[in-house]
Length: 534
Image (cartoon, rainbow, N blue to C red; front, side):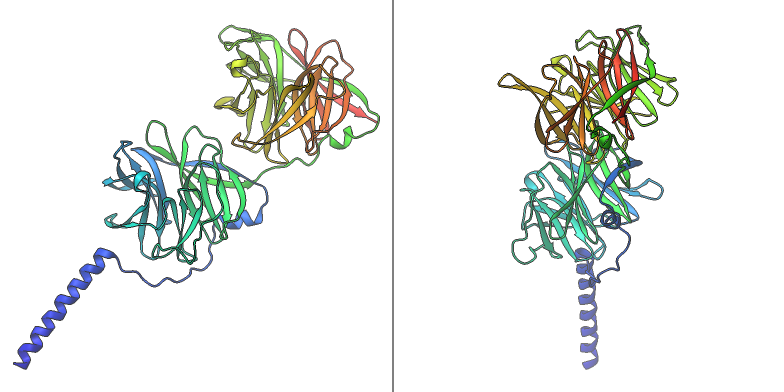
């Protein structure tokens, strides 16, 4: 009998063991968390460098569905896509990062997943729902992508990131605050909701030191420390697609973009410090008594575009330090105006390229961003396009994007010292003509304004601007002059009178300590080097 009972007990224990094992397989066993050793991550570069710019290389294509949240386990990249319907059905695609191949598709999942994060302790993918379900998360086995459970969150969740160094989750809430949750998705202590991000937000990521929040429209990464104090903003290259998700492997970010027609692309980051010039004209123009001489550099020829339109009026101009770019327009002052860009070797004056049949309005000003290798052209005229600028790849003048600014912009200049743009807009206060200098970030969001009197030479025609470490240089016609303003206060500093007064001064730029001025000669034009002596 005892032997029989012993046998029954053994069977019962075996059944219990099987049941417990099945239960563990269903819910997922959780190994103890061990804080990892610090490894390479984006924080190393961010801590070491004050001035950061961002370029990206295309890494892989996502072919199906509307791209939403994404994450990585270091080997694989997981991205959620959906069918775009009112009651969406999602898939999670799994790509191997090293060879960019799709290794798994897990479909027919109810809901829309705004963000994904990977927990290396539990080997789980956590998906944050969006829309009416934004109090929910779904938890998947990362290997099989089998749904393990759905949980209700203590806050409405837009984005989520697991922090391996603190064994917790950081979530972006629906009121654009950042909350800290423990490993069981409970609020960590008291209410831990922090500073407002202040813009349209997408996915998020976290490393040993920082929390990263991806934004759309401004297209940048907001960097917070783990007290949720804003550390800096890293601007992304402008892209016609919408940045959706953010994760990292080592020091490199991976950013998933959604294309308007479905699918998307994943880009790998290359972070560098942005360049700041070592010399500029500011010390030269501070001479108390200036003597100015103009020395011809090159002529700007009129010509016919590929569509046989005659362009003969020189307008905006800029330089990348090696080449001079001059805008030559048809000058109908209508939305149908056609322009060409002439590209000259600045050292020899030789014409090296012409870019034809461009639609850039009056092409009133041009500026070069040395950190993105882009040329930005302000349209200015007619009134229908006064707020517009167009952004071109300087390599081949391929149009990348056209942006509408907050004010009509006749002049614009990239400021490499502040890594921003300064635009000029004219207005009148009590019949006195003023210039308003409007400051834009790299996503062309307005971030400040300074009002300044137009200068000692009032009621004249203002043309284009240039910027250095201290001053804004405003080119004026009637009398031809470069009017100098303090960049910070807008205070008028001085007027540099140009000795050639019979033709129209159009644009100004500098290379090192030397200013250049471009004239319209009716037809064509001439570029001069400005030699300033005390």
